[in-house]
Image (cartoon, one colour):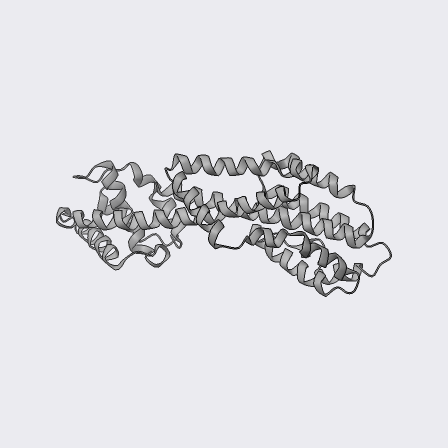
Length: 308
């Protein structure tokens, strides 16, 4: 097939509505050389289709977009493109470098959250908690290995060092003991903080996956009414087990034992229902935050590797 024919097919394909659709559509072109250009140059030129069609989604500079448009038009007219290709390649490399730096900053953000969670867990100095959460260390190692493979491990470490100096410990402040102490005390008075916390949990679960919601098990209003019963824990334990199973289903299979251990700990909870509900909510928040972080991190790495 001619370059003109392939470009025409792409540009006229109404099924290509998003940047991800476009990336999938040009995958077969990666190994198709454009006459007069190397394989590497050909891949950059094929990418002009995405630069042209999805300018805003990729923050494409005006000059690069113009050069992409010019290359496509010349190719469709089957004209020589050598007179403009050198400038296109220069602009493409500059844009790619900026995009690469943005990717590193995004990975740094997720990696820093992992480090914060790790620090918060270690500060509990509770051996049982440390044993349960130790698999998190494996994820940190995987991120570092991936960064080393992509040649930005030193940059990652430097960015993290800056964040430690400049930013508050965001994840730690969420997980700190004081918040859950207040939550437990407020449960004894009214359900205002419970309602607020349930809405926050519902939003966190949706960020893990749009189909996950507390409403699938109990509407929030019903959960609040259950606090008025004589033994509310009998209702909250199934809710906690259900949410653990849902999170486990969206996590990697190697984390299955980790969730089972958390479930066993939850089933052994005893004492006042306010304390047991506090423990359930705290566990789900920690697990949900970890899964959200992993999901965002690996989605970013996957997309970046697709662009390589």
